[in-house]
Amino acid sequence: MSNEKIELIERTLKSKDLNEFEILFVDKNVYETIFMKNDIDNLREVNDFEYFIRILSQKNNETGIGVVRGNSLEPKDLDFIVNTCISLSKANIGPKYTFPGNDILPKLELADKKIIKDPLGVRDNLSEELITEMKQQDKVIPTFARFRIHSNNRFLKNSNGIDYNSSTTFFFLEFSIKALKNGKQSEFWDTLYLKDRTQLQFKERVKNWAKYAMDTLDARVPISISEATVLFPPSVLVPAMNKVVGFHALGRTKFEKLSRFNTEDQVASEEFTMIDDGILKGGLYSNPWDGEGVPHQTSKIIDKGIFKMHLNDRKYGSLNNEKSTGNGMRSINGTVINHPSNLEILPGNIKFENMVSEINEGFIINQFSWLNPDEISGNFGAEIRNGYYIKNGEIAYPIKGGNVSGRILEMIKHCQYISKEREYTSSTLFPYIAFNNLDVSS
Image (cartoon, rainbow, N blue to C red; front, top):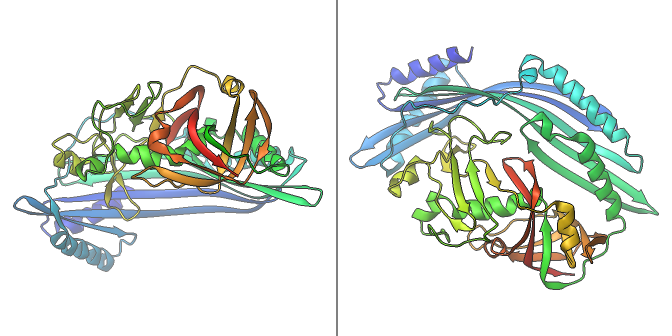
């Protein structure tokens, strides 16, 4: 059925005598369970599609690009969408740009075969597993949870002969737990996307969330320490590393002279190695091709602290006189943006539990209220929502409130410890990292 829809769009495009066009078509299927407390409140199934059309208008050494999103295949609607895209391609003039051609793609297995065969059965079984774990937590009250299975089919076709398709499955989990004691109340709320069923780990996650909610009841405001050692778990590293290090590693920021990274400069500790991997097993953004149709690849950004390369899409690869590294991602409106795929930090040589035992005084931060560093400077200041104070190599007591501040670009130069253990969070595979140059205030 999807092929018939794509052919209909293609016929409409060809009827306009267009030389350069592209169709990205996405079949989207969502299977959701909503929980209220320990019971299933609602089951939902959504099947939908959307498509994005890009049309190029060449003029000397410049190119106009029109991009339009559509979700109707009615002839009148489709004709209007294509005409709108043509008009935009004549108005949005920019640097020279062309679509890629057909290429050899990496072979990836991105879809869970059991989900493809029986999505509702898998959803119901996993929902029951989640309920079972929720009911085991007798000291807390689950208030709300949402569990979704996503199953998407993507098709990319262009006037240069590309005709690609891929199927992928992934999960979304939202969970809220409330704890009560002596008239006091606390809540732990988390959301995350995960690629594989092995990453769900309901038993461990629900147990940890319940512990965080209970411990927060007895939390204290942290003591103030300058140049403190602060341990970031993988999930807390994501907004720090992706928004700042990922930003400065882009070809766009190199071209716009915003990047603080120059090739072969020492930008991080020798223990720090970061990779952009568009074919990472278990990576949420893994796919044989990027948003433009360029084969995804593995690119070493920082090698033992030395910056090695910027990540390009086709536009910034051309502007930087470099090749695309497969880092053209589609935004929600269908435009291509220069963006990392899956970021990976290689493991260190110490276990997490030994990291804690080596810290004389410091903190573990499990959750900030909002960690949103400035992408250019890397500066941030964030309130602690859940964490622990470490004294003499042991966890002394839980903390909440207070503030942690620092600069991400300086943090990566002061990695005191990097754990052997790593965890998938959304589009990342990160270890635990202890930094020794942060400021903690009450």
